[in-house]
Length: 135
Image 1 (tube, rainbow, N blue to C red):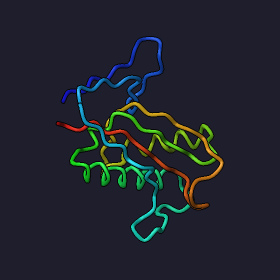
Image 2 (image 1 turned 135 degrees about the vertical axis):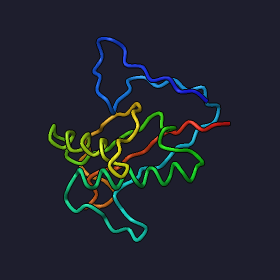
Image 3 (image 1 turned 90 degrees about the vertical axis):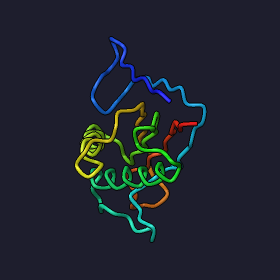
Image 4 (image 1 turned 60 degrees about the horizontal axis):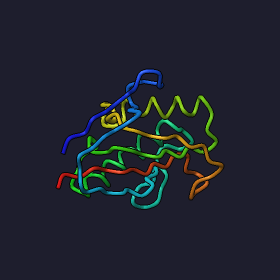
């Protein structure tokens, strides 16, 4: 499987984002929304968007690996952020740069969506993803 990341001229471009991802994969995994909850449904990170985002990204990594892939196979994600503001978006982007034990989460196509609430009143971040798998 090969993946091509494109950032066409004239579109917003910054390291964690690829505007277009083209994959030759013929098998996909769809990962349900991952939050900062642990296996006991305890929210990790308190009321801190950056800390919750880091934990949600680590949970996403766990889910992706369960599908037999790595986070480098994530081609697209939708990020839901409660009460999205520019400051909240910046905190999420900051989390992307250190999410994997100090290493950045790989660049992929993603969309940030502001929502009023998520499944739990303590959850600030939820991330669903599409993963391209090797055949």
